Image 1 (tube, rainbow, N blue to C red):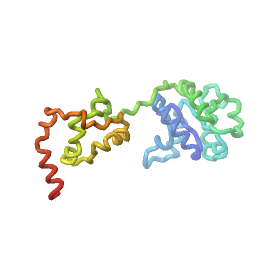
Image 2 (tube, rainbow, N blue to C red):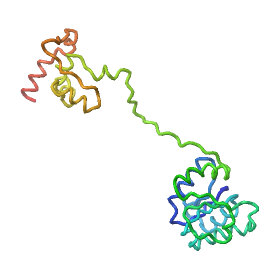
Image 3 (cartoon, rainbow, N blue to C red):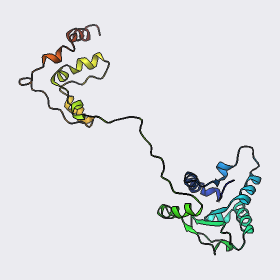
Image 4 (tube, rainbow, N blue to C red):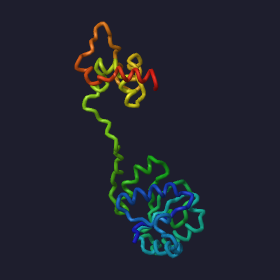
Length: 225
């Protein structure tokens, strides 16, 4: 059994969808025609049952609400259950300024006509309907972009700078030459690398034993492939 019946014009669906989402998230069981009437069900009987069994009748007020004959039937049925308003069943929300029906003029309402007013009044609306405001679950990225030492990764040694194009070509990756490496690093948001000075930078022998086949790769690249 839904605790809250959301009465509204079909032209105000966008707002009511967000209201329904928020209230459902915050533990308020709502009757909302898009979500509460099952496929193949007699929707007239479903609406009638929803109004009869709900504890609160939330009327989303707007010019379209006032002019809708179907909504008029819903609100007059709800008022008939408590014409004096002693049970505080009727809970109006002012979505747009409009000429209020006579039996709704004396009932206190919350103004939700702007986003700021909605956010300001929503905690009171939620609490008045028996809910507790909760935060939306945060979206977490499945991709871990953290790096323990980003500077070390962004700055290869001298052998990687000189022999990098051959290695990348062998691995099927785009070739980045040493002459353009600083610019490529800057485009990727990494620190700019200084071009190695051949007169002062020596290639460590320990770095060269990792790729003993590099000369052969160059011959193949310039020959058959």
